[in-house]
Length: 106
Image 1 (tube, rainbow, N blue to C red):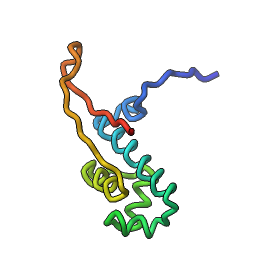
Image 2 (cartoon, rainbow, N blue to C red):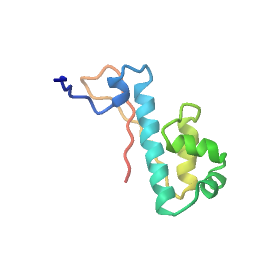
Image 3 (cartoon, rainbow, N blue to C red):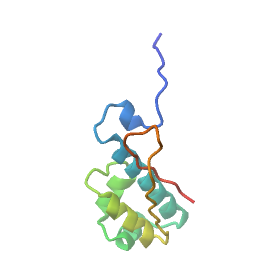
Image 4 (cartoon, rainbow, N blue to C red):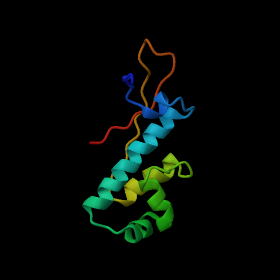
């Protein structure tokens, strides 16, 4: 029998990736972009045109291949899809020596 290990909330960290936090943020943004496109019943061609990118690049983003797409571009995609993006900067908790990035969808 295989041993089952409990993972964290970040699969990229569980895999030991150096940029795990950034990858998790991008995955969350890509998921939301995909949800909005689906809800609006846009084709990938229509969505790519609206987002200012090629259809193959959008296809990659929606399949989780977003290493070549900046977080800034993904935030721009959300605004082009009619979403307000708000960035909040606040102090890290007392027990933390460094801060972290998280995404909250309202």
